[in-house]
Image (cartoon, rainbow, N blue to C red; front, side, top):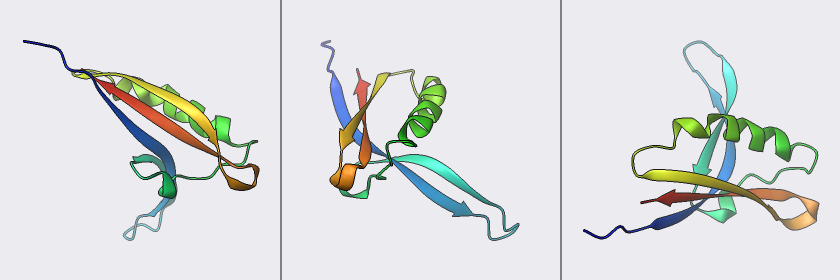
Length: 89
């Protein structure tokens, strides 16, 4: 049996969520495969979101998923997006 490595690219997105039953509101981090829907971060806030995701990456690594690599990329107007590369074997 040969080992096959798969690399997938995602982009960090922040979504507001409102619980219609309680009215509670919060933000969630999620990944999208489309760069066009990536959240554009201001330079002074991007590290907060990157650090939040990194602290929880251990919950997503395991089984065939071996790693997540985060990298910041320039977007228009001096904003940044975060590319998340997932490695699966």
